[in-house]
Length: 296
Image (cartoon, rainbow, N blue to C red):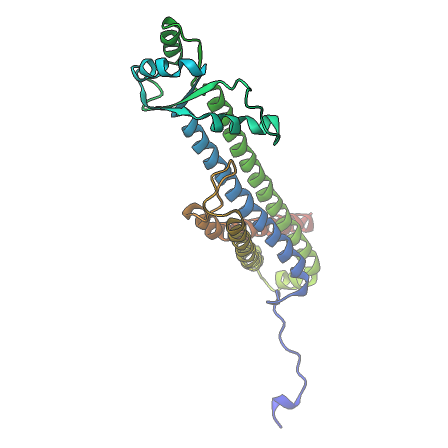
């Protein structure tokens, strides 16, 4: 008669590899990693777009004047320092620029639309808008020269706000991840209290028990991080396909870049490290407190 004929109880590990109780924690961690990836990639993309807008504004200027003064103004503007190119904006383009403010209704033909000259700057530091406007005024031309400095400051302020918002969102998500790992570790300690007491009585050190929790929750953080990063990458790719690669609008492009790949790669590792460290410290602190009460 072999031992297989007896219904011997199988040895159960302290942490079953597929514990049903860990599924809610896996889902919560996956969602937080997913949100962290989206927040990081969205903040980086918005900050990059704001930088592109700022550079575009700093490299251009606009002159607003009467249509009959355009021919006389061009030689004066070309003689100014820091200007590489001047381009007269057509009347149809000017009316198109007014359409967002005036609506889709057809504009009257006799509407006095001022002429616009687009200036491309070689160096924003060498171009002086006040000097250019004074030169036009000295020639008897009433014009308004806008170097877009006010808009550049607004864009830079918006970029800093977006960056700060993204950092705050990441900090909150990391804090929530740590709190979740601590809460799950404490729940695991309570659920396995009798087993831990037996291990302690037979001589198991706190370091050994803490290592079991560290390995378990570190592995769980890695798996949930990989799942969350994959979902974030899939969503980002879908959004990039929907938005299109050739869009030139105000919204930032959503094409997958090297920085995004690094985020998707490093976030699961960071999630595993956070969960492992939080679990290990929680176990050691809880066991040391319990041991101190026992001696008292």
